[in-house]
Image 1 (cartoon, helix red, strand yellow):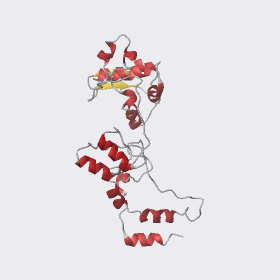
Image 2: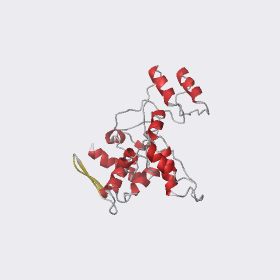
Image 3: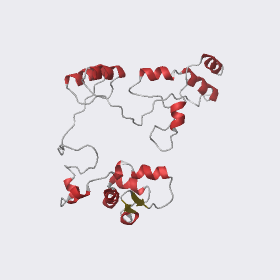
Image 4: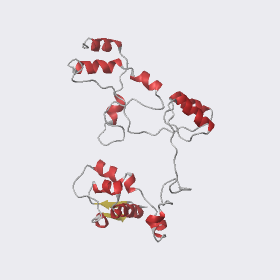
Length: 234
């Protein structure tokens, strides 16, 4: 597998196309040096030589991203024009297999504003994907056996912003008071399957986010502290 992994990284760099090549170039792997800088050492080890020193987490993030996805070397090389063959086929190495791909097929997008309407359309089989179902909608559909809900994190944050040009709103004490006014645990019960409390400006999964702080700094409603914070408000 590691031989295929090293070859897959080399292949991406040698193709030198699009975002995949740009990601690998972020650690100095290019068309000119990929064959020399990415090598299999043994069955459990590969060697990746970068152009300069980087944080280990950054390097692992780069070579663990989609741009370095492992492809089946034997399958791909069995076709004379492997890259053209991939336009309508796949040579992945993961748990899932592409059954059919129709080139130039179209996807119809419909603008449906009401979440209730989206739920009914899903139930009736009129649409395949809905984006704005509420936690209650998801619970109802799941219990009825209409869908199987799977939670997948994404880089979306909802936050409260204050205009710091306003001298009153620019006070750190006011920021603190606003924070204590929000019932985070109560909100988490309402948005239980669509959002979660995350008190950090970087989304979970991004380099640099402190997961310990993001997960443990959930503010409980504490009346004495809330009253004390309110005294700082204008």
